[in-house]
Amino acid sequence: MKRILTSRSGREMYGPKWQNMESSTSSENKDDDDALHSASTQTTTAPPLPLTPTPQGISRRRINCLSNSHESMYRATLEGDCVAVEMLLEGDPKLASDEISEEGDRALHVAAAIKHKQIVRKLVEKLSASELALLDGHGYTACCYAALSGTVDIVDLMMRKNSSLATARDWENTTPLYKAAFRGNAKMVSYFLGSAKLEDLSIEEWFDLLLVTIRREMYDVALKISGSNEQLATMRNDEGTALHLLAKQSLFGDSN
Image (cartoon, rainbow, N blue to C red; front, side):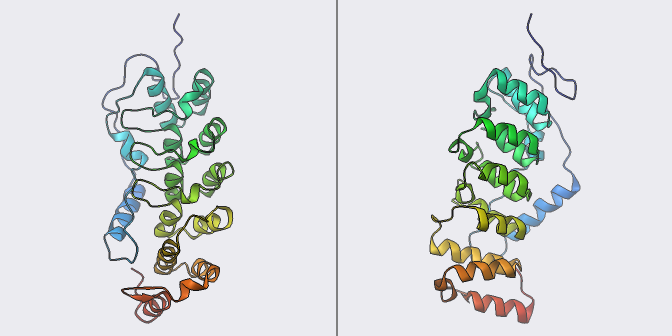
């Protein structure tokens, strides 16, 4: 007899596919994404931050999964059903790293986006260090989602296994470190600076990071960055040096 695994919502996770999944977006998340979009369209010294798909956006679209087991993993992860995720991984450990939908979603990315620490921990246990840096079908690493969510504990779970994730680049060559700075999350940026391997960042990328931390008024972080390389103090772009930007903000309150 075929075993039926059900999710916490009571829906069967093996059998016919669900159709037309709908989920409302909370006003808090919508406002946050609108603010990020607004910030990314303003003139900045560094490239604008690409908008990362939200878990609400994932759940709203119709999902075309690759198999019943992939669909089961997708639904269990999205619903935060840790027991179902663990049972599925016991049956097929590859579900931890597989793309589980035709859109290229991966379980770790979904779990990081919805801030589910327990599921992230289970998945990290099953994944190799290199697998933690895999991109999903949208071109992002799981660390990208975690950096934008602002959940340091989740980033820490991944970074303990792969300390290079802070600079693992997405499809637009943007790092989780830069994403966190652009979001204005000083706590996340400070964690990355203290825990990550950052040797592969170019001096130009350090300069971009310095400028965005000044623009987001993370002055303690900016001071730490500028003190790490004296060359940053004299670098300039069309707006001048980092000191020029700092003076402009102090005089005119320009924090764009």
